[in-house]
Image 1: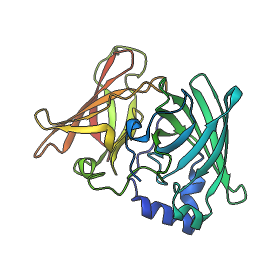
Image 2: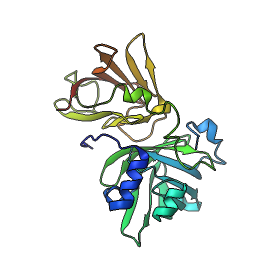
Image 3: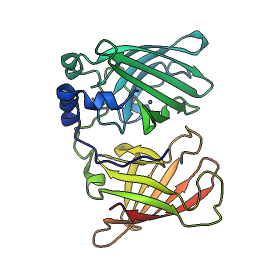
Length: 269
């Protein structure tokens, strides 16, 4: 699912742009403080019932869903999260969808059906994380938020500090040929980006509460997170060089199987 990287807009600007032109909403179709599943509280059962927030898409999309008998999903979703801005933009709608085993597809529409938000994701076995695509194939992930939370804490202190210090758009190329497994192909480049509070791209998406800086090794470590979509790593180690460790040189991806893939990083021109 190769993507063209793009720098993330601040959430407030993205929602404002959607209000002015509808562009952010038209491009996609779906895929307070509660950064961790433990903060949100345990789910009443191993299903999708509860509130979820999506990233890395520009709009801070959130859904409040109930998993019914037979794998039917119902609820409400809003393009700006469960906040006043969504009411002002009138961008909420009824969520419909299905889940079978760990594969879920759901979405909502608004603007008299003009805007269709749809996601196609795989759910972790503990039902605390989802990852897959949004719209026509944009890579995203979802995490649980609390029952009263509007969305992820995008505007909290430090949310963007680590990624803003290492911002960049890259292409990754496997270092080993033959490869150690079949998840990635030699001679193909993979899009990868750092910024806005995330690391994301063809190797999955991780947000600020899933990443940390290791000063001794000059690395950003993303994850580990629960296994979700097939072929998506559960952890990444980003190696940096240069003054202050700001130049990404390589990435090691670890799969749920334990297979490790080394990538060379090249700054996208």
